[in-house]
Amino acid sequence: QVQLVESGGGWVQPGGSLRLSCAASGRTFSTYAMGWFRQAPGKEREFVGSINWDGSRTSYADSVKGRFTISRDNAKNTLSLQMSDLKPEDTAVYYCAGRVQIGDAWKAGVGFRSWGQGTQVTVSP
Image (cartoon, rainbow, N blue to C red; front, side, top):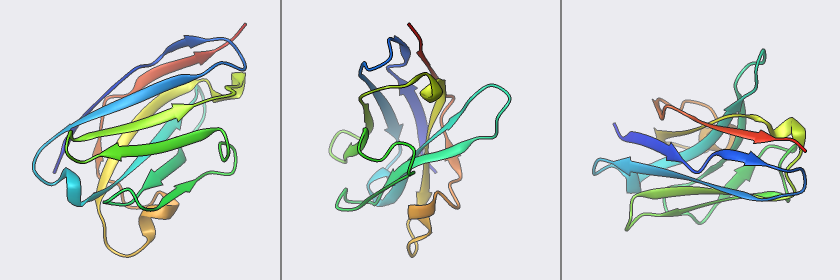
């Protein structure tokens, strides 16, 4: 298990950029696949993207592909989500999550069991 804490959320205008961070504690971070998810008011939580244990592979939802970039620094136990060209529909609470990497299910956002508390992102004029 890893403990996860997100930061970096806030308000941004459409077309703007924001960078979210997720600090992890625990010795297993470097062996975990990590992901970002989001939940808008009245909607179910949805997969945003994920990254494998060493950062060599990523996977993104179609809605954010080309605009969002996930990266990780295993030496610092941190996960990042760089968001650009933000749209009002990106408004949501963003969560980082982790899972033991077995196979490729992490690419679809499946099986994530360790979750942070979330950080709010609001995109509006």
